[in-house]
Image (cartoon, rainbow, N blue to C red; front, side, top):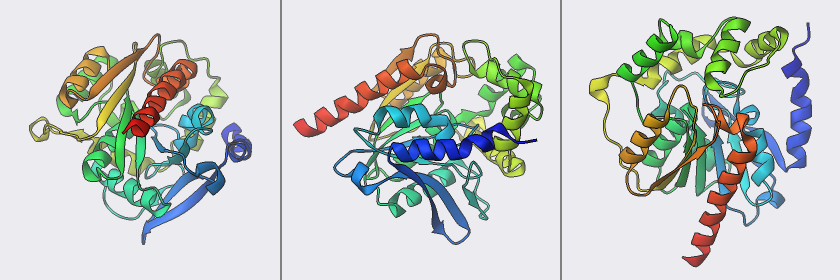
Length: 301
């Protein structure tokens, strides 16, 4: 039986080509290859760079398609697949968010990005924070959604107990159509109307590399006694679904406080964890407002 998401791939490719993007495979070092959607030279000339980092489901372009279409006329857009998602892979043993950040930064520099704004969701935002710390000359500004600075054991245990899961891998990586629909229901504010056949196709298309992704999930969780305060030189804007059932408003406020005085926070009404997909119009309006203010401020400087 044909996978509907596989059928959509050439359609997505044509759509992204219309918006000036095409996929490249970048080898950051032998054994590590990153798939990244990059803008054409004519589309990227004299535009500020924006890099989108996806969460722990789907891939880059599937997660951020609406945002690419919303800002590609004013910004040079780059959309990588994180390691073991989509078309990115490594034979190296690293699985931490810091390792992801190191590889993403190397891939961006390979395609000519010297400075950028990083826009990240959940797991991708955690990688973005690490990139900002690792390479402050590369990352100028961060827009982070529905995330946490360090995902510690005690927080994860509260989430797992609340939803009745034994471990974090089981929570993040459903194996059945019903399990996926339940996971998406947790991630959304509204109901999830996904047919069983589409859920099965989604699992086949986006939940490959299960062993490596399980290792990523385990490495994402930090022992409580190893969590360290983070200090970033960049300004951060948080965009949050006000009905995020995983990282709720208490987490949002705490994250804002931990990141310090340069950090601002905006809530999207009736938005869940995957806020950029569930409420794309509201999310895109906020993103464009923030990015426009960045352009104006840089011109004034």
